[in-house]
Amino acid sequence: MIYFLSDAHLGSLAIERGWAHQKKLIDMLEMMSEDAVSIYMLGDMFDFWMEYFVHDKAKRQYSPFFKELRKLHKKGIHVHYLTGNHDLWTFGGLEQIAKVEVQYEPCTIVRYGKTLFLAHGDGLLPENWEELYPPKVRSKIRSFMRLRKIFRNPFLQFLYRCLPPEVGNKFGYNWAKKSRLKEIENPCPYKGEDKEELVLYAKEQEKLHNHRDYYIFGHRHIDLDLQIKKDSRMVILGDCFQQWTYAKLDKHGNLTVHTFEGKEEESDHAQ
Ligand SMILES: [Mn+2]
Image (cartoon, rainbow, N blue to C red; front, top):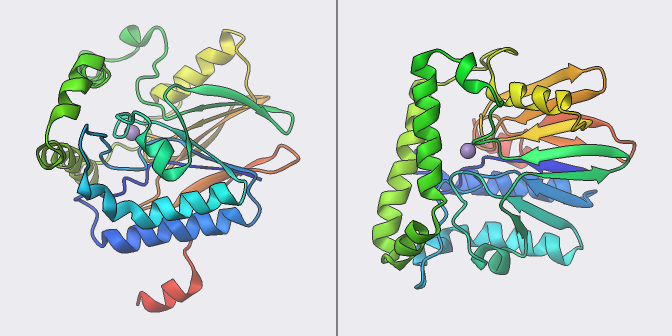
């Protein structure tokens, strides 16, 4: 079994009961570990992840999560970590501490006879996006892409890593909190097959003869399972803090989407 999950946004200042959140994520991984060969995390597992040049005490809050990931590694389960737009600032530290394999770019893999395209999903647009959207949306996309470029600039990354972690974290976690709150107050639902960027992107890939059986994305925090062509499907994974959705690929090459309800003891507690 191969599992896919994304967008836990651990450490978010906008998510109450951070400890219970992390615990549920660990329970979810435990459940997966029963029959997983590999697990793909498709980005934004942390609300803000930055590796400074000096020790960052704030990372301690994730110790249980790291411990679980090391346990999976020890069991022989490969955990792949694709970076998102909240956690791209990893420079070898996460790999070392959590024993995961970090990938910075979308990738295509072949498993159980199926071709899968995996990506967090930020910054993926169809070629002709400028003709597709009205000016307001266009300028929103443009400023997101500008910010994305700044975030990925090696020199600016170097400068940020020089900051004392308390200073960098204060800014980073609050920036992330703002985007989380904005999402809660003003959620951006599925835009429809003719508007949703990732749907258009996947469809375009198919037209360009980059055929894949499955496309799996995170980032949007919507739970979408869509047949884009007779032999091609796409899934957007939802999240791991409100929806708790994940996907799995079985050994016959079937991809299915599920919701993790939590461990039973937990729901007994939660009344
Ligand atoms: Mn994201």
